[in-house]
Amino acid sequence: MSRPDGTAADLPAGLDAPVFAEPWQAEAFAMTVALHDKGLFSWSEWADALSAEVKKPGAAADGHDYYEHWLAALEGLLTSKGLAVKSDVDAMAQAWERAAHATPHGKPILLENDPGPTR
Image 1 (cartoon, rainbow, N blue to C red):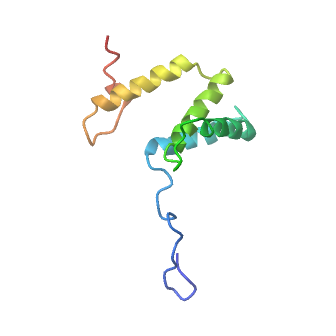
Image 2 (spheres, rainbow, N blue to C red; image 1 turned 90 degrees about the horizontal axis):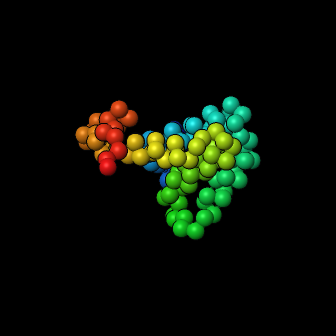
Image 3 (cartoon, rainbow, N blue to C red; image 1 turned 180 degrees about the vertical axis):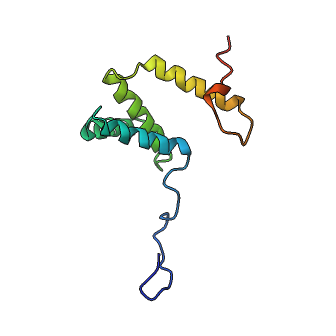
């Protein structure tokens, strides 16, 4: 940002920091907006779901777990509306977790890297 005289303006602290700390946070945000845009839930339903998650005991005072609450709110809202089955969401999350552990460092995590559940 620059001033009218061309010199650099000081930005408020944290303004130059990335909005999302991890790519999955941006994806969760984008999914929420896209699902709302498709009319699957109202913005007030979304706000109520997110608010309920953020107010649960154990939320980090510094907000570092905000997008974990965001994701839980989205999963809960989709489940409550019958758009997703919790066991299916949980199974998919576990598959991605296994894929992440099976993917070499520095390589993209792909679901096809999931070696499958171990018994």
